[in-house]
Length: 179
Image (cartoon, rainbow, N blue to C red; front, side, top):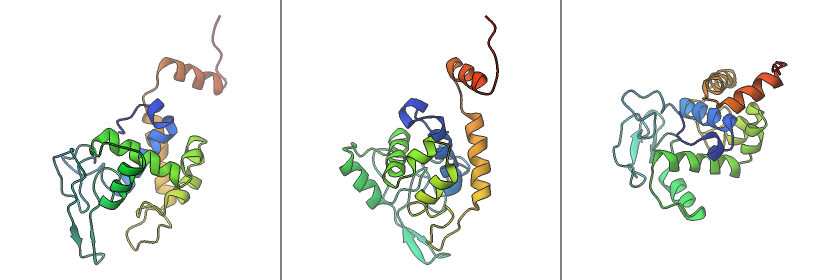
């Protein structure tokens, strides 16, 4: 589960999308990981959040090398650009990874559709950034849109809600509050 609050992330839809993205990238399901935040491409783990690990990993199956790391599989060069552009301090903490993913979602035009609940549109907008999304075109494993939407709905349903959120959802779905 993302470490940001719903307010910090931009809403519950964004948190659910981040969790879906981690599932899609294959990081949140790695055994003994810190919910994917400490996963190198290929599934190995790192243990130092002080900076991006910058380990170049051979992926013979795809005939590439990659520095992808963390819950959202940031390449070292992408992380460096985010640190510079948004004045991050460079630490690769879970919270920083979440914030960086939200910034990338905003940059590619996916954040507003996510917040509006237009998840399929957001997935299409984010595909050029994340290789596991359908239509990414990197020659790597891409997940089916239906599977991603199912995971998104599961993650959204599991998001903790405070009482005000629950009351608003109850009323929005036709419930009435006794006087």
